[in-house]
Image (cartoon, rainbow, N blue to C red; front, side, top):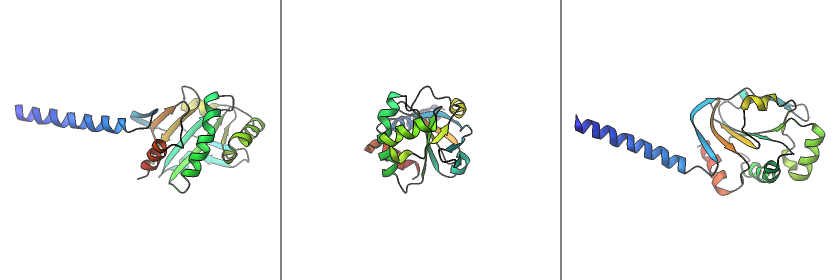
Length: 174
């Protein structure tokens, strides 16, 4: 009986150590959810009227990012996001940018000067989709697995174009 209990304790300690090691390997600010949850509905259009539904991303990871032009950390982060998008071109990662509760003119003018490659951002004009996702602030990023479960959350601006973040994002699809 003691040998059995010792074996169970060693196994649990090993599992805990493995989980802790994986958690430690995450880039700064990336939070692994203890219990993944279904991604809320996300059906929006971009400024050109092109419709998007997150359900279309099933089968691959999705990087869902909420931002606004009035948000200081968002303003600083967007150029890094633009470089991240370029660096991850061809990777099986769906990148979904969502502007929260602003109009086309504001977003177009802002992105045109700061991150013109991100002009295909989706528009949450009334903020209701953002409300469904319940970010604690902006910017907020959610990583949704191929089964539609939110697995990671990132609060605040990040240097998405740096090696630790790019390696992490690439590892999701491997």
